[in-house]
Amino acid sequence: MYEGSCLCQEVRYRLTQEPGEFGYCHCASCRKASGSSHAANAPVKREHFHLLEGAALLREFESSPGMFRAFCSNCGSPIYAFRAERPELLGIRLGSLDTPFFKLAKEHRYVAEKAPWEVITDQLPQYPGPHTG
Image 1 (tube, helix red, strand yellow):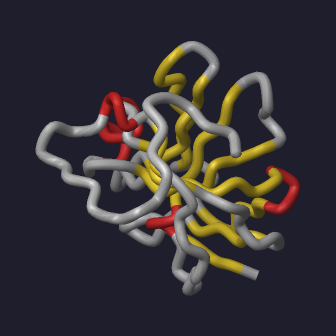
Image 2: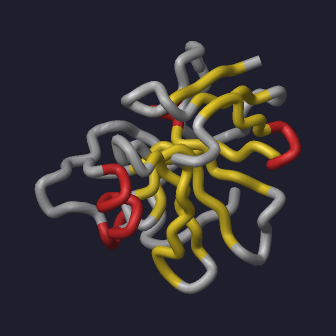
């Protein structure tokens, strides 16, 4: 099991499935949602995501058609995202995990949109747009 929370600790959740393979997303939306050069999101089936506290604070925002991002309305921490065509699959924001997570990223996606000040120095595969493995 994995547990996670937002910055203010008012939204807390538990995962009853290990997050899947992940990569770094450099799209403009993920950069803005994370406040950083990229986002680290790992897939988990919605049935394995259990909100423990803070349901009244969790908000979902449609950042682009069919793309929803959930965050704490108190502190702004991103928690998960999902696409309307696959609502059963959540992209957990790995920075919100409290339980140590040891998987390593497999790729960089949307590098065509990466921040001009970011230099990617690892040897992971890079894709200009989406990549589904």
